[in-house]
Image 1 (tube, rainbow, N blue to C red):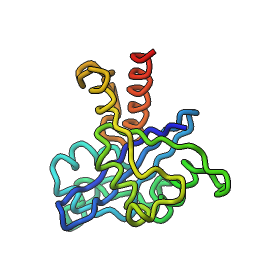
Image 2 (image 1 turned 180 degrees about the vertical axis):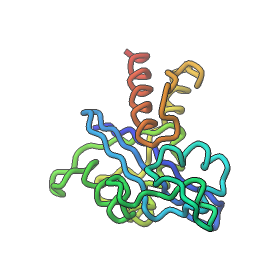
Image 3 (image 1 turned 30 degrees about the vertical axis):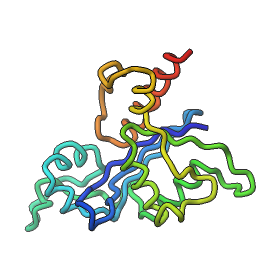
Length: 187
């Protein structure tokens, strides 16, 4: 089965691992998964103007209050929201969502993302390193941009996302739309 996913993350360079903010996954059969990490560095996200403007607004947050720190104008991550989980909880849920709960019956899995190199790293780091991936979890992600290029298409030829840009679940849904468009080009 194909799984289309997207992650939002904080990237701070080669001496830091990617800091997962959120992950959205849509399965070929229509099932969906979305989680926000309770553990990402909120200060680092909000100190990055692009992340503060594009990613923070799609996260479950509390109302802004008069705190003495710089998170005050933006509110804080709502740790009581059911989509907010620890990294360990997210890893277990992702494993179950993609591979099921029967280790003796591992399904065929294809992972797909748009410009997915860093998404794959963020996914792998949920489990530790790439060698720590659960049995049956692919060690690579197929890339929608590479498939489009193989078909002679440019990014401008692909369907445009109308809403939810930089919300991991909305982006994952759009990745499925793009994949279906690319499949139709082959047919």
